[in-house]
Image (cartoon, rainbow, N blue to C red; front, side, top):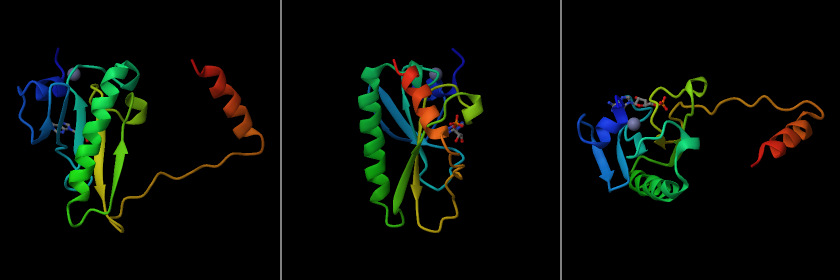
Length: 135
Ligand code: AMP
Ligand code: ZN
C-alpha cells in the first residue's frame, strides 16, 4: 500500500523516531507547530479513528503519555495538546490514523479555535440527535 506512515512504520521512509514497539511508533512531525511536536501512529494501517481496533487504543494512549511525559520534562514546556484529525474536512492530510502531541508554552501565540455558542433550545436538540446516534 502506498501509505507514507506505513512506510515510516516499516522504516522504508526515514523519520526522527522517538519511540517504537511492536504496535506503535512515535516520530517528530516534519512541520512542527512547536519544536518537539510528535506524531503517535499505530503501525497497523487504519485510515481514521473509527477504523482503529479498540485493542490498539490502549497502546496508542500509553505511547501518547510517554511522549507527553518526555515533553513535560523539557525546561520550556508548560503544557501539551493532543489532537487528532479525521477526514479531509477536519484537516486530515495523511490518511493513516495519527495523534499530534504538541508541546505548549504560555504566550507561544497559538490560539484555541473560537466557540460559536448555542441559541435557545439548540443544545437540547443537538443532545437528542447525538444520543440517537450512540450505538
Ligand atoms: P494531519 O493534517 O492530521 O493529517 O497531519 C499530518 C501531519 O504529518 C502534518 O503535521 C505534517 O507536517 C506531517 N508529516 C507529513 N509528512 C511527514 C513526514 N515524512 N515525516 C513526519 N511528519 C510528516
Ligand atoms: Zn498506512
